[in-house]
Image 1 (tube, rainbow, N blue to C red):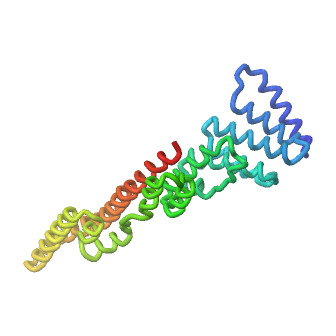
Image 2 (tube, one colour):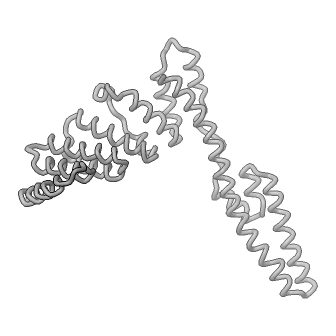
Image 3 (cartoon, helix red, strand yellow):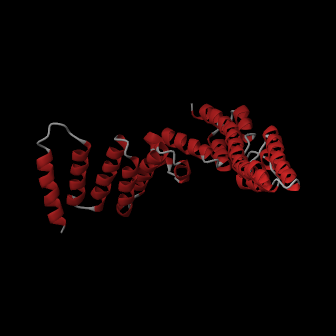
Length: 263
């Protein structure tokens, strides 16, 4: 079966080589042929690593990661593991998958030529993934022990912010219109929501009291239901906005210190 696949790939290469342009498909095909013709696992590993680099160079990051997952079963030495992990980091970083990127740890002795890039991706990803405790620990270990001012600034960096739970805001607005918006840090919007919802509810109650039931439902109860539901959604949105702003402030502080540390 292996020889059949190899023969097919060779024939396809002969056909595609008739074209002038060296396309992405042609390069990947040649690297796949190397994989199938490989005499040992090390060659197989580096052929798949080459495919991953080719995909990354073409901006096809998901395909690059798939090739790296294929390469895992042929990865046996520390150097091969380091090469694969570094390539994974690059692809995770380029796709903004910061949580995955921050989890990868590589020994500096195995990626000496790319260690600064590795540290940049590592610290930046931890910052973006809000893993500030671990980020601060690494920054302190990298800090020059003689630079006490920088070390003190790093130690004073916050590791959390005033987080507002969007679901909690939604529940609070369900109980009392405007309460969730106020808790999220927007009291004026909360007050406005309370007045509008209260006004519609009062109008509906007044019409029911005076036996204008249809008017009460159409002009009072129905708008109240719509605004009440909208207020719940708004409170969750405002909580997310608050969290984005507050986390952005912390990330900015970390990024400033990371820049000082690495440059």
